[in-house]
Length: 369
Image 1 (spheres, rainbow, N blue to C red):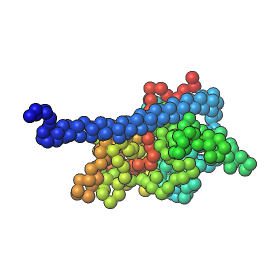
Image 2: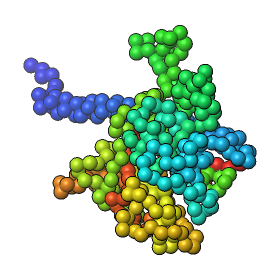
Image 3: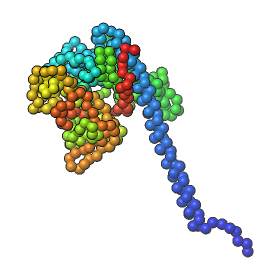
């Protein structure tokens, strides 16, 4: 009898095991590839948004600031006086505060940071202060303003209803389309192609001279138009933070709910000038400065107080188990201005919702050119 060669059951099982490993490895590549493609698409869109935003603001700065003798833009005024409100240079919406003297634009005396945020400015908010200042209740001293072109529309009852739509178009990437899930073609439910409008932005400006400013573009992913939910700009007080360090420590009872890759924004702005050893002018408790620091008249050449608007990307979030949550940052903590006697609990931090990326180029400021 002739015996026919074949495979034993053991050999079959070994072959199936090896093939299963290969199949699982190949199948694993599909979701990983999809994630990588999604991240690449997001990076591409956010970069496009930042490029469009930068180009628009450079043109706007040249036309509305650099080429005018007396710029009338609210954001330009707010760089010098953070409590600025158009037509009302007082402590708008902040009980007990004094009017802050106009700052001088110098390279050693940076201006106050200003968030030019037409979409955020148009969103309904609970108090007037939260419209003009960052924070759920407007409790910080980082000014939020719109653009003069939109303010002109708002001043006219006939054109005021168009302000939200104009702000949306000005600060949104309009290149994306929405697609029908059933056919994969662009959605035309309203009779025209629906745009995605997923990515929008604001500008963070800080004057370095009367005609020059640094600019950062903050790009959001899926920030809803005309919607500012409670908690979207909640303000937190750290229990530990040091200049040069990379960790914010927060009490576990109140800390920003961020994840790896998210963003924190240090909004510590004291709205004061620091003399060599004294504060000027006298400040109420709402100003986040050491309470035992004696106020007095200025002597000598006052130096700027802390004027932060610093974004930090989160590396990790760790609950220490001892009542503290440590949030590790990608870059070291830094202050703009004089942080004399500034303690960790004098700082204020926001975890803004929906921030996709922050683009900064300090070597290419806004100028008249």
